Length: 460
View (cartoon, one colour):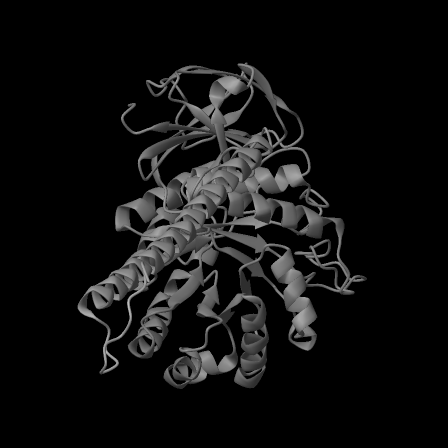
């Protein structure tokens, strides 16, 4: 029959039919491969489409995110570290609890100095402080009686900041302190030894010598200190102590001469009847920003815990501290907390900064030992305080200069007139950066407060 091929007698297909079957099989394989290719292409096409959809969704969400960012989102000043904040007369030994140390941490305190009755009590405080991220200065009797052994016990503890040797020593004690420091450092060379020096209002009997600069220079010469520390509580009820800024000049200059940093104080308690009571945010700001404007690399609050009875006054009456003698928070706790937050946010300005110069303005006399402002950096065209007393400091840090203007009046606001070129920007309290031109050229600076400007070091 036409169109039909039969097998031969052996059951094999005749040649023509065999070729026909082979041809059909080839066609079938081609069709199968085509279907596979098509299916593969469809999968590939779907993947491509999926990637395009994902990319479009990413772009859409990015646009939506950017369009819904806060209108005031601004650049923030980076910081290479944080200014240490030390609390003197910190948490008492009988209050060594996690809750108390967390309370201190919440106030922005990073270091604490409390003298403990023995090394075991010191150990307990260190263990608890480590849980909240506070560091302590080792201060217990064993540090003096067995310095090497005590240093060896605590040197690897994560909460150790350093070793407290003595507060306000006379010059005659310097050799003893030097020997103690060397014994500690022979075991632990990583943590600092701490001595706090007298202010320049101490008399020659207290200092053990005269003049004051000899006392400071002998301290740096004899005692192996990592940094200098001195206390001065300048904010009286209605005025500032007359020699405070001279003392800052002296300590800052000596620290620069020997290539070391210095730490300085802010009074956070009553102290005595002559001083402001209680400490206001303005008085805290004035002390802290003046210290930092002179190059201080650590701030010390005196005190954190009220050190005297709530019923018995003393010559140095530390009532009215952030935590009262009864263990309750005073209004100063919240003020210290706010001040500490400002220090933290502005560490990008002050941490690691170097003083270029410090000047003062006033209608009449400026503090003894200081220099009057007579010239400005090229980037600043006008800086006027209308005769109000102000501190003006030029710091350098990284690739930038920072101009710090402090209102030295802790009772009244100051009018500041400022014009800068286009390179000048202003640093806000939260560390954000804005063009200086975003603000009026004439502005009010709150009592004791500081206004900070930044411009690149390419500007003289």
